[in-house]
Image (cartoon, rainbow, N blue to C red; front, side, top):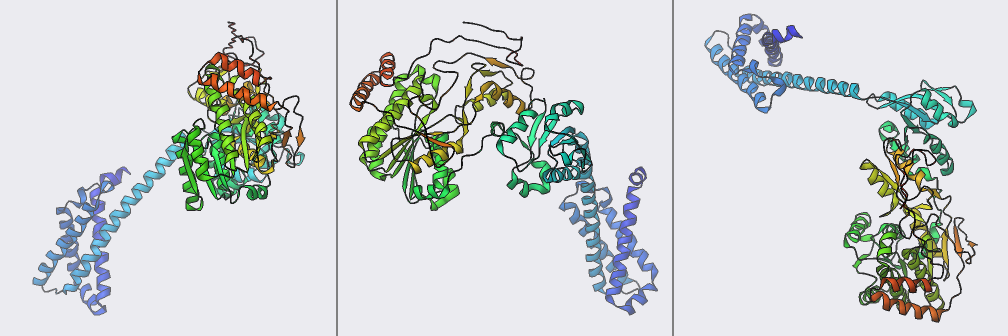
Length: 639
């Protein structure tokens, strides 16, 4: 390389001389055999040709150009230098006895120019290619390979390992596999040995200093997947997974680049609710459907699923225009003119506007998702919870009846059962409203009750994720607090299913599966983010918030329960109530709410909802630097 740099000019001049000679011979061949024979006798002509070209190339400074930085301008210089050389040669050789036709110089010019430019371009491309290769090699050296354990030794793992070995840039270094099948024990897949079963994962991670676990089983039920991931979570490894079956098939040629993080949905291990699609199509298809609170977490997902069921018209009603605009644009992008979509910016508290909307569109089905839902905020503003939740529902239900809605579905919550907070009490009051309205109206009124929704606005998981991103601490109200969880799509499907199978007056309840301990949820989210709970991210217990209780319930004792055709959906029977007294109390509640008398609102709400009771003042407990709830490293502060 040093020799090439030292004699660079000489080498380039020699290469160009060779290119000039090649051009001459090609022209001789093109012009005919008799001319070629004659020209061979005049070897001095070749010396002159090469000499003149070399002098012109030097005068145009072709050998001073740094070609790896060359532009089109420098390439044009090659053409000018060749033109100058051919012009001088034409004049010079015309005077001499060696006569050459003008066509010779024209062809020579094009050939020399072509070879000059091609040789320079080849050099530039070769330098660029070498630079790319060198850069890639340096990047590969910089990639720190993480020792990886792979769960599963099936076909998916074969494809994954093959792809990892093909792509040197991948940051995984497979060191062992685990699989529960006895036939696979001690076997190897692409050189990686199956070292044990699922239960051996913690021991193997410690033995082989594993940093990453990849879950690589495609066909598995949610519960078993949850159990395996629970074993994985006992390690301090980052847990990842191959994509689902459909994505795996699409991306298997480059699957190592599409390894995904484990989500909290995987850890919950819930089987999705399965609803007969024909029932939903028959119920929604061709009808005018309204969703109040249609821009919210549940409301927007309802709109997505309703849009796919071919309604005659979909009306989104929401007071918050940003959310309404967002779901409107999403549906327009997806369905265009195939969906008759209307958006109304309005509050369910505004009776006059609400009646205008009902009168204008005459919906046949209403999903009522508009509500205030944040427990601590509603404790501080009970009158606002009553105005929005109770009377928003009351107004919407009245106009649904007045304008001939076929079915009205209320979005309720498990917090309505034996409520200990204002939000829960107002939602229980809403359930009572729709059950009372069902007995006196042609419209079929039903309520759907479910637990917490993963990832909804203001829910615990987005809060935890923000706290983890900020470096902690992650705040949990109490070590023993538990909640039921479901996904947003599940919640929306349950609402649609309830609407399709309702007869009026029911409270539909989803089998929420096993309750989840919020402390475990916090620990798992920290681990999923690649940190160790208590060491990298602190978990701090801050005490129950106003109105919060440790355990949520899904059913009142006196409601009983009935099965439905859908295995995961149940019905709570309607409760008897004194309707005259109830509506009289509702009227009284409206008066005190409009006076913004918080104390009286709470008192009257407690009379309307007998199961509502305010909890005694809670102890405020803080645990710092927590690794285990039962550990000794707790710093408690009682207030």
